[in-house]
Image (cartoon, rainbow, N blue to C red):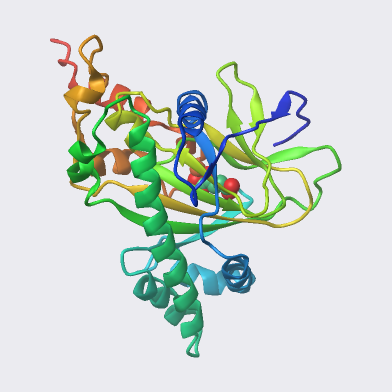
Length: 331
Ligand SMILES: O=C(O)CCC(=O)C(=O)O
Ligand SMILES: [Fe+2]
């Protein structure tokens, strides 16, 4: 499980400054990043450092509870908001808070694990969820703008009108015998089940994206910067004009790592079909229309130790569907 890695480099992603209008050069570097990496940075996003500090201290408080208490929110509980160690990886655990009512989603979990009123926790998670929702809408508009010159993004408002978001607070606890210069995977290579994901990673670092030649590139954390990555749903909707990045998290230091990922997704019942204008005349449609929920069910796994399922993508889903649609051999 623990490996020495020598082919890793740092990736410089363009930063989109959300306090300024986009100019032609930022559009062009964003477009390149979306096609090549499926990753870019945003700055001046309006989320304060103190909100992160509040969420961090709340999260550590929850993750430090006993396994027995946390499992009251686990996969076999009624709320199912906690993913324990050994589902995605031995070192990964996470807590989910779902929109659009982030307050009540957080409160449902908090009521189960605390025997006193901790409404301040639901309030900070509500604030974060609402801010991420607004940010996601803003970023989606920017991302759609780069689809092409003269492309009227209003045409697709209806496609994205019913999007919803949820956040997952992730904590990684490296193995205690992790030695200097050794790394281990905290979360294996995967693509996200979202249109876009907005990631806050703490100063520990460890997020990596896979380049086309297979090299893992470090996305180094920078204070005040959030990382955005394209997910499978937008890749399929855009007929591969946007790339859903293959990424992972490696643990390089013997310290706990915290990240918060906000997933902005199509509604479950949406039929995903790339619009004709996006496919273009010369290109073929790469994905048969599919229902979002069918893809989510294909990807989701609560099975302990089935780490390989983490790496399935929308391409695997399409291949699986095609295989299942082949005529049965005549015996
Ligand atoms: O922890 C991170 O930095 C990224 C997490 C991630 O990729 C995910 O939750 O899908
Ligand atoms: Fe991810």
